[in-house]
Image 1 (tube, rainbow, N blue to C red):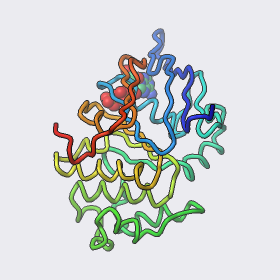
Image 2 (cartoon, protein in one colour):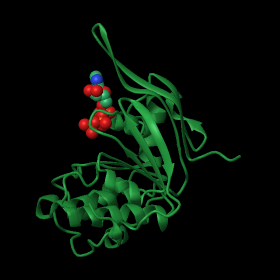
Image 3 (cartoon, protein in one colour):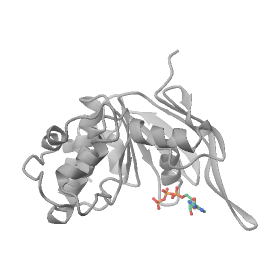
Image 4 (cartoon, rainbow, N blue to C red):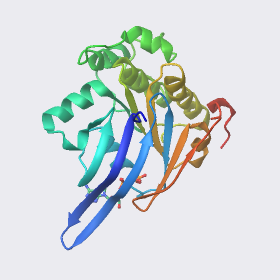
Length: 235
Ligand SMILES: Nc1ncnc2c1ncn2[C@@H]1O[C@H](COP(=O)(O)OP(=O)(O)OP(=O)(O)O)[C@@H](O)[C@H]1O
């Protein structure tokens, strides 16, 4: 049997706070398939950001294995983690994290410039509907437009994996849907492995796989045979 793109095995992350141990992730086990969209669903404090940070090479687990394309990144040193974050992962955060004194195009080019197989910045911005906003600064764009720049920036790196932390958290309903459509397309059309973490249960319907976590543990894993296009989801 071939391996999944992501295989998380007995992943635990704990924090020692004086006398008490805080379990942020407690023996997580799950897989994500190449080219699929996976949603990790859970309430605040469930451990979602912790596992996303670990998958993105921004943090390392206390124990367990985190296999990405068959390689255990839990064993990586700082240098290997930096290279992994740089070339293999595109990040989309709740609050965009654009560089304020760079234009839309320059924000994407900056990300582009650090990887070998980058896509053209202008083309990628056109793809997310921002071909007419190339020379604008982030402060001149709406929240939804800024998030689309962030998605273009992530896609332009041409990463294998797209990690999204509450990507619609700061957006209104319709704008959120536009952004989610782009992420769904990234898996369906561009065959990226996409992972979204959210507390919004409505997003479960758009995913190929839904992993519910609560209180630091995986509570259920479900596959959708027929994920619904974002445009048809209501919440
Ligand atoms: N650096 C840290 N030191 C101590 N405890 C931490 C640290 N980071 C996270 N935690 C704790 O781990 C648990 C899980 O946090 P995490 O941020 O992963 O949850 P979450 O599901 O992403 O929540 P939210 O949706 O509110 O961001 C929480 O109890 C949190 O307080």
